[in-house]
Structure formats: C-alpha cells, structure tokens
Length: 108
Length: 108
DNA sequence: GTCAGTTTATTGCAATGCAAGGAACTGAAA
DNA sequence: TTTCAGTTCCTTGCATTGCAATAAACTGAC
Image 1 (cartoon, chains in turn cyan, purple, brown, red):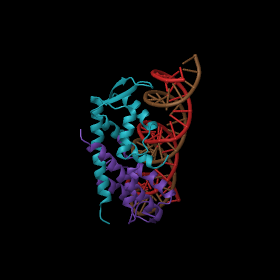
Image 2 (cartoon, each protein chain N blue to C red; image 1 turned 135 degrees about the vertical axis):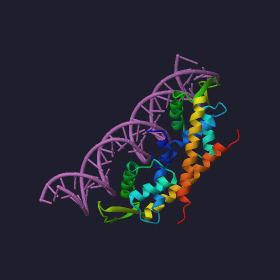
Image 3 (cartoon, each protein chain N blue to C red; image 1 turned 45 degrees about the vertical axis):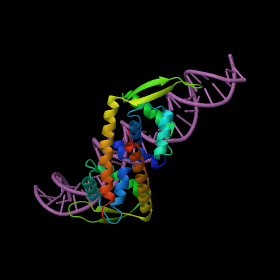
Image 4 (tube, rainbow over the protein chains, first blue to last red; image 1 turned 30 degrees about the vertical axis):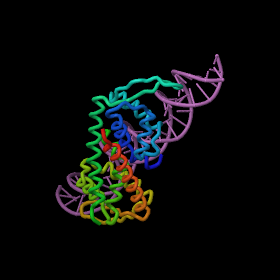
C-alpha cells in the first residue's frame, strides 16, 4: 500500500456520494467520472466494497437494468440518509481544507 | 472511531511535517499549533506514534533540552529526507483538493 | 451446453488515527 | 532516603478504509 492511499481515506467516499447525488449511475460510470476528475488510479476494487458498505447503511436507492451481453447493471442514487452523509462529509472536508491552508500558508 | 478520523489519514502527518519545517518544536508545541489551526481534537495519542514512525524513517533531526520539574523535552525539526516527504505530501494534497473541487463544483 | 465477455461481489492485507494506559524523569516534602 | 506529585515521553491494540486479487453470476453466440 502506498502512502498515497492514506490520504484518500474518506475523500473517495465523499466524492462518490457527490457523484450520485442527483442521478442514477452504475459502477462503471462512477469509475469513469472519478478518473476524469483526476483520481486516475480509482478502481473497481475500491468502489464495490464501498458501494456495498454504503448501501448497507442506507445511503442509496438502487435499481437494476437489463443489458445486452452481461448481467443486469445496478444503478445507484443518493437516498435521504445518503444526502445527510454527503453534507456531513462536505462540511468536514471544507473545514479540514481550511485548517491545512492555515498551516501551509503561514509565513516562514 | 468516528468516521471523521478517516478523513484525517495522511493529512495530519503532512501538517505536522510542515510545522517543524524550519524550527525545532516539542510535542506540546506541535499539539498546540495543530489545535490552533483548527484540528481541535488533535491529541498526543496521535502525535507520539506519528513522531516515532517518522523519526524511524529519518524525517527529523532531534535534540533534547533539560527542563525544570520534568524529564527533558525532545525537539523535532525536519531533516532533508523529511523535507522531501513534506513536498511529496503537498503535491498530492494539492492535486487531491483540486480533484474534489472538480467533482463538487460541477453543475447540477 | 459450453464458452467468452462483462458485470457484480468477496476476501484479506496494509496503513494510520487515536484511545488507554504505562514508564521515566524531576524537584519538593516528609 | 523515600515518597509523592507533576510533567513528559512512550507503547499496545483496535477500528476503518483503500485496494489488489480472485471468484461468482449473468448473458448471448456459437
């Protein structure tokens, strides 16, 4: 495990929550969006356990959709409880980013 | 463990490295500075293991100073190798912060 | 029915925050 | 000298999450 991974803890989850805030996305679309945003290494090995965890906690509404040539895809969108969690994350993220800025922008 | 804790992973370490970039600080001073910056819950239970870890990896120059009424204090300042680690953290932090901004500032 | 391709799911490990508790050092009091 | 209180330093153990690796399940085509 690289030390890069540690910094991601909590952040990736917050971003995924944000991505499905208003529209249903399937895992492949989430991975795409994360990579496009700059999380180039974001993988399904990270996403699936995360989705399962969050779903167990009631953060999603899900639906399945048939496809050609593969098992039906599962789509995720934020539930009410997920929305609360997203807001909590963003508050914490904003505060943390400000704290870091304070420390790094200090003179000397 | 609260979920808050996860977001801190890696970030606290980067901040501590920054604090001792140019001057020797003892643990109590580091805790003070972290709390002042907004990490209100930052504790010695977090700091000491971190200092030991980073010292083992050669990130610090240290010195001891006698005190009244207590064991000698230990002071920490960044070494060359610590400086490299600090820079690596900050690059990663900046990139990550930008990625998060991309995801959260997207329309809709 | 078997096979290849795609999607979903599971298992296990590594790293770090942090609580809890303990050890060590000092000066003063007894 | 011994004990005590105060302060500082250190250690142990657990919880959480990212992520690699692997397996399972579903589908259409041959």
